[in-house]
Image: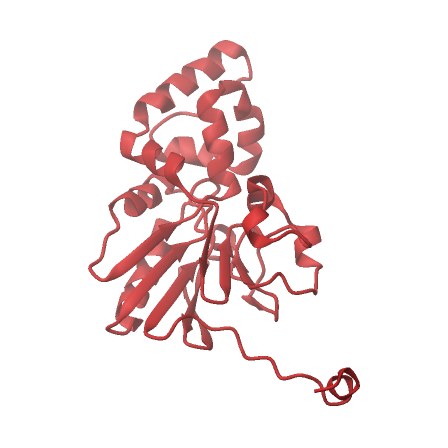
Length: 251
């Protein structure tokens, strides 16, 4: 087909798809809402076909909501025959890991909802900002944090790819190949990614930027529906070239 003819009638692009015979689910930002996570997992288990299934968590398991420890425990223990479980890192897990290295990071972590995470582990947040108080709380949290939770935090991946989809927490840097993305961008990027209309090479499935409803665009799918504030946790499902959404709420 000539270039002029393609301009006149356009080109037909095949819809993005996952490999035949598999079903893929991805869950958006949980932020300490273990109640919503349990409900959504029940929906997914009941919805999934009897075939090869993959479940991907897009990060931000801790902070803001009241039950970060319960969410982490669920992620640690979650196994299901016939399922591939993928756990990705979010920016909130990243700042938690930084806090574990340096108690002074609490000043920044607090604005991210770190106090709620401390409370979920039975640790009273600092009342003051002096170094002694920060060290006390840090030591208590290090004692309260199960080794299995720490191992999970350190082992989280930055991205995952299946078929024509690329799964990541925040997004990708436009103009950079998917296999050359910087970890910092996969965790934190927002405006440059959200405003880009160009193809990223694959459809990017992400969380990080909350919206009232899932965002479905040709180059990206956003499924952070602000669970900790809205009470709605969302997942996206891919089978062949079909894409649907599942959600649960606290009503």
